[in-house]
Length: 283
Ligand code: AMP
Image (cartoon, rainbow, N blue to C red; front, side):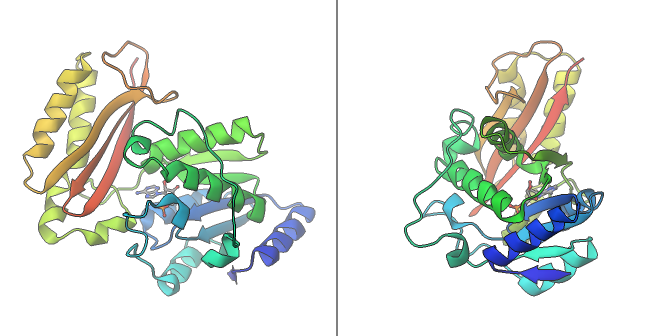
């Protein structure tokens, strides 16, 4: 595995590979890799070249958020990325990515003001900007992202379409711990007790899905049931619970037949904010 940290060097290498006819898949990450990230690298492995990127992107964190304490371990990440089939690991510094007086940002309207965007108003502007930059640096044919961050996928797909990026987006399923908790780099922040309580998130999503499948069509009743389950855990503080259309991300008050829904949530356990979602297609 080749490790590159210079933008120019990465662009030259990507250009060389493209010229040699190689199909490139990129997996952008913020590192502290876990099985969720590695599963995306294995999906990318079906292409000729797997490029993975590790960059804790400051512009997607608000000033009060956890940028400085976000977990990092480049040495371990390099071994894991290589074991999952990464050919080139791009690990730039902040100054390499954001030159002084960086002034250009990408804003996808509407889709970024709901759900995560309501709680984190500047988040997606940072995400779309870094993803566009990483696409310009790694020159991929394919970008691989996780369903775990479903709104990120929807927003990036819209950016790709609206700005005519010639890149295909693949989405990998959410990888979970055996007890259902979605894997996340932030899970290390959970205390033992918070970790035990956090399993309620997936259970509440599954319960909501069961209610939908058994014919419940009132979103308020489903959300109340989730709310009750989650608030039963002493450390849990709900940020949002939502049932929305998976394309527009518009929240629904009642559910129609034949709809594609995403049930999503953000919940604090102590100082750690966790998100999760499941997608449900009603026949
Ligand atoms: P992050 O390092 O958290 O920015 O995530 C990098 C990529 O990995 C994103 O596309 C995430 O959606 C994806 N990802 C994070 N956690 C998981 C998971 N548990 N299962 C699948 N993909 C994930």
